[in-house]
Image 1 (cartoon, rainbow, N blue to C red):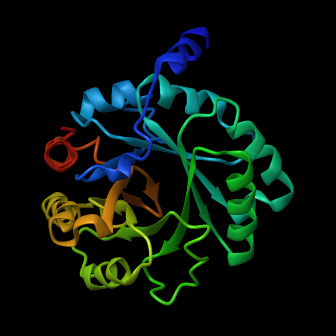
Image 2: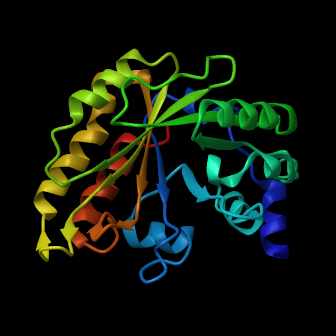
Length: 256
């Protein structure tokens, strides 16, 4: 812990990394233990230099994971759902304000929960950017308002050979704030023991390349490495996927 704290003292970010003219890249790696247990190991394995790392908040404030982000020069993004409960949000926001460092707070759930949680973080955490998470399947989502939403996050969990791109374009083009995509693409199914690596590569490549057409409307793609309902969405377990993923992060997320 002392090493992490020391790193925090010298770590600096731009005021708003999304202001840069490039794709901001992020990842969720909580289930990576079999392959890469931590940010440094994940980036060495995948060859990808991400800007943001997502942290799922289930109980107490995940201080160690937040400090790991700062120690590696990354911006943490807390994932907070309405299952967390309003009664614990104030304590979470106060803990997040401890180091007065930049972070994103991605909030999902009811509009009531979003507004309460966003309001609490707006008061307590001066360097927090607020992100409203919505499912790709709900283009008629209720928007909380530009006064308390800095970015919209579209949760896109896709099959390897997806045809849902029009839904993504529609949401992004009509959003009132810049958009990030929290992306997971299946490449293996335990149900029929089938691999879909090539289809997954095409889909991931297509999503990252949306930046070229959408410009500043799409500011980030966060790749979500998970296993869910018998589907494998991780990029790190397949060499071809890792190579393609690293190439897109390096190409589109390159810092000047």
